[in-house]
Image 1: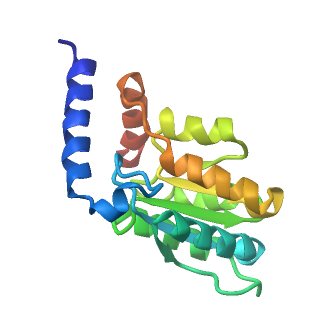
Image 2 (image 1 turned 30 degrees about the vertical axis):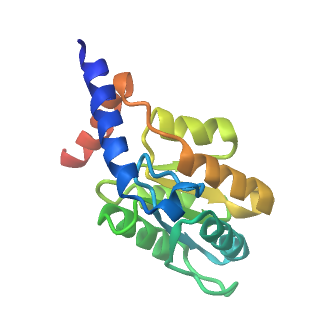
Length: 183
């Protein structure tokens, strides 16, 4: 048996153990329990505020526990103040994943990636959404709110939360990314 087969067996056992601890009334929800993604931190600047509010309601309707780190209005704010709050919720383990929405998603991605343990990905379509999870094991998604419709954002985030990291050949690459924090 090679390492990949052993990893798959361990993954299946752990997934099975976890799913048996999920209450019966929650098993049919749309949340990703195989990766233990239940708690999601969301944040935005003023440009992404309305989209964050829509997304927050949508995620709650799917059964996720949402932690909103702000902002709380369309009044002008600085996106790094909220991006770092999302990143810290994920880095601390308080939330398994995070979503940050600003005007373009670029600045928030840069900010989040300054926090140790974070792999934030700026995505703009379903292909980049899936790649960020399958290949890079991204734990924060940054988006440009005004660049998408409400439906597009909700679909993108849902797919991102449900997409599993493939592991295998991608682990050494992710480990190289994370090793940069030590240098």
